[in-house]
Length: 273
Ligand SMILES: [Zn+2]
Image (cartoon, rainbow, N blue to C red; front, side, top):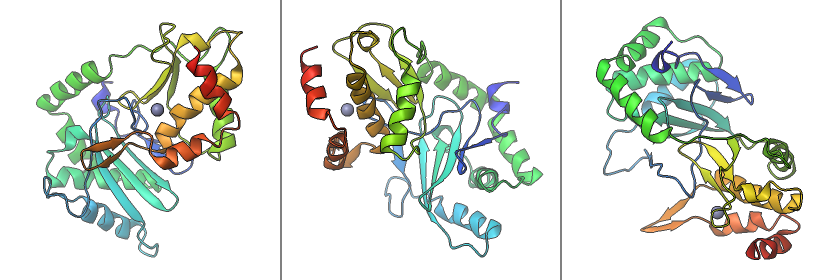
């Protein structure tokens, strides 16, 4: 089955989080070419506001539940994918930027599909059919293939290194600092022992890559943990735009960083690498 045909069978993860398959969980960061646009109340460049559509579907599904805050963004996933999740009473929806110019009726169908999956209800066949017809058009198939090639180029060697297992450390950090709630991106050791690029979170591929330099028995585990923790904070604290300025490590990011007990020591260690 081709990629574009698989997008309708979602799976639930972490209770309230849904990823459509083949597709990446959401995130964005420091070092990505990802573009996200917030479709809020007043976006002069994009008059289209998807909030009413999602709110209407929510009212239909959960008439007695107060409407949650709903944040909807178009997102540059590496595949045709959409995500929806509930976090602290807020609904976060990310829709593939491939659908940015889709007709209202298609986005309405998508709202039906996503929200019903979130609440574990089957979507009406007419919505599924409408969505499927749109994404199966030839020009859409060509665009999907193009972004797959451009955004999905990265080869990852996986989290299990010779000395350390990134997944194991991620899970520990997640429990210790994020109540275990941070969604897990792909984790991988980099291809080379880079000293310049120690680690980065790549939102377009939803992956954290860590330099091989840390995969060594002589490398203290807590230093590696600190490096990974920093990248995890990029997932927690997306880049903030203040006018023309991008705040990659805003004050709340830095405050969180200092919750790591040996952060000062770790910084000093990294400077000497
Ligand atoms: Zn950083």
